[in-house]
Amino acid sequence: MSNVVGMNEFVGMANGDLHCWLCQKPVSTRALFCHHCGTIQAVRDIDHFARLGLERRIDLDTDALEKQYAALARTLDPQRFVIRGMGERTHAAKQLEALNEAYETLRDPLRRGRYWLQINAQIFDETAAANPLVHELRAALTDAAEPGQCDRVAQRAGQALQQGVMALMQALRSQDWRQANQILAELDGVEGILNEVRGCRVKLAPGNDKGTPEEVLMT
Image (cartoon, rainbow, N blue to C red; front, side):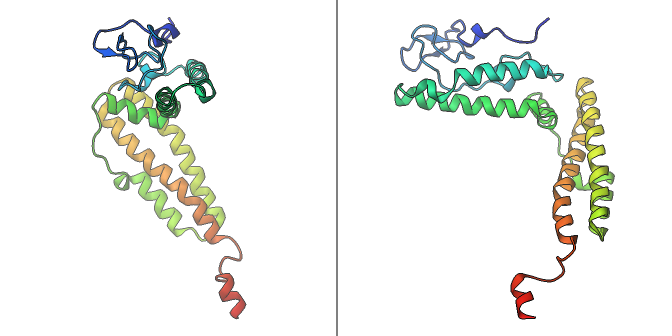
């Protein structure tokens, strides 16, 4: 069974609670366009899955995600609205911004995992610094004396990231919310280590102990 919502749902049947900003006729929450006057609608407060016309599930069909995003992005292409009024151009731009945010969140496993916890109201306060693996990797990076040692830290962090994503998905499938939060905190810390590796390599690269260009000229 497909987990894609039909594209006609983005016009949708009116629910009686929302109204088109232009013609004031009822529209559905998910509607991009009013099915009475065809005017693009303001951004509604709906979840990322609904915005992309996808079934809400943690195991996302990435091919369906890409297809839905491409189709909706074409629909919201700014060039389609250049001759429209300011109101429609503004709504179209905001709809595209919301679409991009939904897409970027769902396509990234870590962001999707965090978002899944958020929409299920299961965000806990976990500290990455207290995680043993993060502490160990940061200590190894701090003690690194040559670029090769930085690279080895990066390799370990990369492997931990891959394994952690798989563990995160499993915890979310089983609704082990506490475990999922702990894994996310660890992955946040591991990503931080990977971001620090480049700075470590630059600092330890040959020739970086000569001082600033001004200091070199003065010697």
